Length: 113
Image (cartoon, rainbow, N blue to C red; front, side):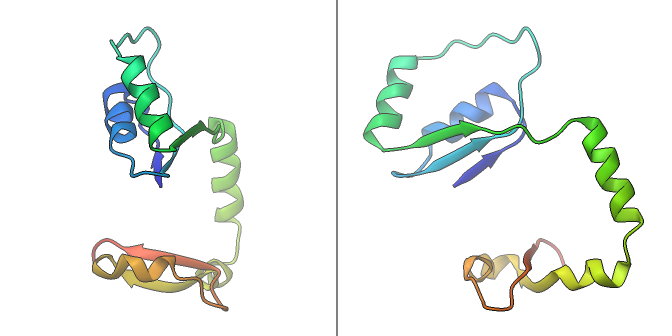
């Protein structure tokens, strides 16, 4: 599974080309206006169909929504927010983060100690 949020055309298509069979990719970023890239759509279509890949887009939110979320989080009890992260997993054991445990609320993969 890939979640792409840059909207950078070449990076998006590179990721699509490297999806594993049965891979899923969610596009959440959009490219700048006026961008043109040459694509071999026949090859891309063949790659996606033969590998049973799924690529879809999702609208995150507008700036106003992020500002509202930041304000709401800023007014929230910090102890309650801390309780939402129930497990920290070091990057080298990231696979463990995907294992669902009964008491999990939010598991964080720690990039740096």
